Image 1 (spheres, helix red, strand yellow):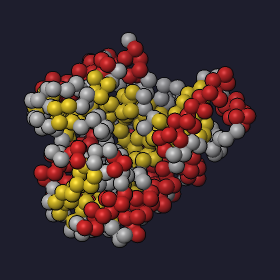
Image 2: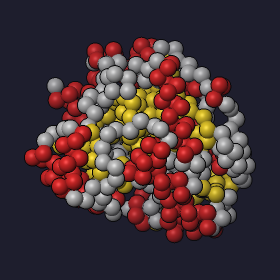
Image 3: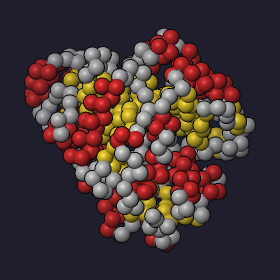
Image 4: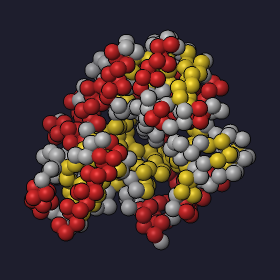
Length: 447
């Protein structure tokens, strides 16, 4: 086991990782920007190091500064959390060259699964179902028209190096195909420094279902069931739940086995997520693989009893997984609401600022992962998520009831949040019936 680990992140995930490390008896080093000087996670770390000014490019994304902090604090490893450098193959490679452990997959694996076109080819080789589309990147407009005509409209243009919904455009006809392809390229180039795109058949009204996997360095790969992430706005997840409301054991087994095959084909080690589109007929298609811990990992932890962060750390330290596939049982139902400092009534405008009274909810089946406290000032420089409210109950119906109660208890004064939006969503008949897809929120907001 490691003796000292640097947490290369901020906010609630930094606090989550620090707590797991402390329970494992590992010393922690937290980095922070000048904007995060009053951050809660600093209070619980054994050592903290300021790595620069507020902009991410000069702090949480500055690899030389983070490596310098790791070396001066004499750590064994770095945990990147999610976002920032968590899926940066160069960062993982630099850690390795500096003989600092990286709590995540190898740089080669990150590069392979992080490029959507290469990941799709890998999925095909592992006999994982993929959405019909181009065999590789598309550079020629004539070729784009030919492929779209063969697979049929609508089609979706995707950035090869994309994520978070950026660099994605849907074309319902040849008239708009080239325009949307150019727009996707421009956005991808600006966001990722890579404007390459590919084309897939657009699956209408699908569910977004992802499978959590974890693998060790001894050849063991296990899946921990699925999460339904269909409640999303502009490809950004809002509410996640486990298990998927329409899942049946046979389908879970097929999706889980497909995710494991892909992980083995990628020589994957550590935690990861294989994301699928699930259509109304029970057919599923590979979408992408995330080579990191997911924001929504708590719902999987609640229904399986597995501490994913601790397991990540143990695996990175060279230990074998502490469980086998047959040990994983899905118990009850868990729901997570991402609490964002945004104003849904003003087109989700960010709402940073000073928090007045903060009262987290409690009671049976309630978990809150947050870095908020009364008097904390939310900086405007980073993601607007300020916490995750998670509930776990024996049934989905009971979980919805508990989430409604917990949302009504939660007090965050001084800023706007997405709490009122979630209260309305959870009352909606389609959500309560589990009859949702990735277009549900757009329709809900439009109505």
